[in-house]
Length: 410
Ligand SMILES: Cc1cc2nc3c(=O)[nH]c(=O)nc-3n(C[C@H](O)[C@H](O)[C@H](O)COP(=O)(O)OP(=O)(O)OC[C@H]3O[C@@H](n4cnc5c(N)ncnc54)[C@H](O)[C@@H]3O)c2cc1C
Image (cartoon, rainbow, N blue to C red; front, side, top):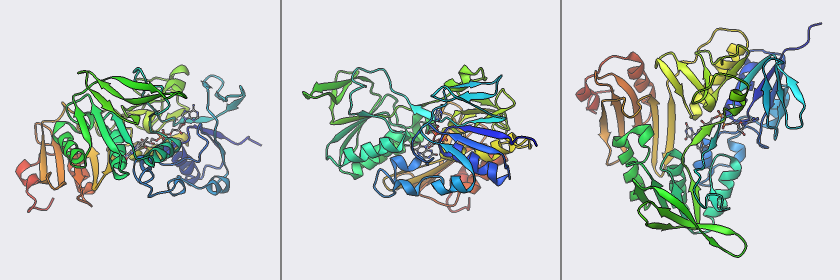
């Protein structure tokens, strides 16, 4: 009798859970073990800075699968367990107690960790980051205390928390070193739309401002943060500080095992790493993207949701490639948006707007110099993502005036 094949998944987020699902959907009947550092069932993170933080969604509503699903599908889910090493020659991973587990195929889905810049005061107990359900619950408690919050960084998470904190009645200051919020993701034109959104909702938005220090006071029991000092010497007073300056992918395990890494774990079109028995998915995967003709690492929900089906096929020896365009969304106050495509700042020629940015109901298109559509973002306009995707994937020049004309169907 041949022994059962053993597939190991390291990580306990959306990508890990979707991969376990995809293996069973592909009728894989061998052993599937998921080793997850967090104590919680795998869950989706977008609500942590939106509906959950706003008190509109409980944890159970955004877990990927209930505990019973793992039992029903014979998934060996080991929560609260961090893999400490991979031995590729022996095809084993090491667990915290020093024991090892062997694998036939291994998947890495270790996600990201918030960056914490080495600022004075950053280790004070009321300086927070947001990545996990526990972090989100801590912020909810803070929101109940009617105070003020200083947020370092006007990226997606900084801005979403700012919106939720304003809804909870807190005074909010957001400090951003760039000249516009979301500059690296959207560029200055659309960054300005988000700047207006937040200032019109009462956020004190300090752009082009460096934080030089998190100021502290000794409460007698602890040294607590009480604000920020900025590069120009000015100060911000706050009862708590959120550091939201981006996340770094958890690639040490892969790098230590000698896998090829750069900004993430390098994977080919089929999500295979430099080791033919190891795939990587989600935030850590830096993929040679077949449509974009470049390497991309996408730190977004849709990527963690959709890559696992391809990775499962690859683990099972089937031919598959991941060629979806990057897609993401945000909700802030009454603004909902979706973005699809890829248009890094400095790599597009101009932004064409269809609709009205003042009323925040429009579609923005990022065009190349030859008028190809690189990406599109619909703001409070719905059911157009498929059409935008068609325009991006067609790779054909468009007429910018026609694109901007709302009387002509998209
Ligand atoms: C607050 C917040 C809001 C977001 N909002 C949006 C949004 O609106 N739209 C959007 O598109 N994206 C959003 N994202 C991004 C999206 O959630 C991520 O891209 C997605 O979670 C990535 O999934 P993942 O499974 O790759 O990694 P993760 O979700 O980070 O999961 C990785 C898991 O692996 C575990 N792990 C790490 N190392 C080990 C180890 N050695 N052993 C065992 N386990 C390990 C980690 O503890 C973690 O639980 C948001 C993220 C956050 C934090």
